[in-house]
Length: 119
Image (cartoon, rainbow, N blue to C red; front, side, top):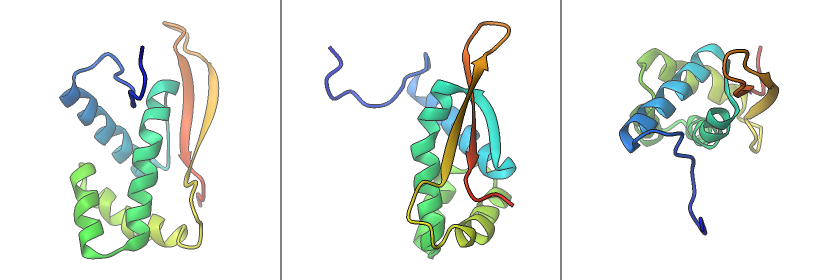
C-alpha cells in the first residue's frame, strides 16, 4: 500500500528524476509552454509554482534558491524580471495543464503545461 507516499517516480532514479524536473522547469520558463506527457506535467507543476512564488518575492535569497533549480542564468533573469512582476498581483495558480490525446507512437497521454499570464 502506498499510504503517504508522495511524488511520481517516472521510472527513473532520484538523480535522473531531479535532472528531468530541472530541465523541464527551465524550458517551461524559457518558452512559456511545453508539450510533454501528462505525468511529467503534473510532476513539475508544483515545482514551477514554487519557483514563480520565489520570483514574486524577488529578494536575493529567493533568487539564489531559484538558481538551485534552474539550469540557465538567462531563464533565471527572465523569471525574476518578467514573469515575477507580471504575476505579482495573482494569489496563486500560475500554471495550467491542457490534456491532449494519446501520442501516436506509444499512446502515452500528452499534455501542454503553460504559464497562465502569457503575453
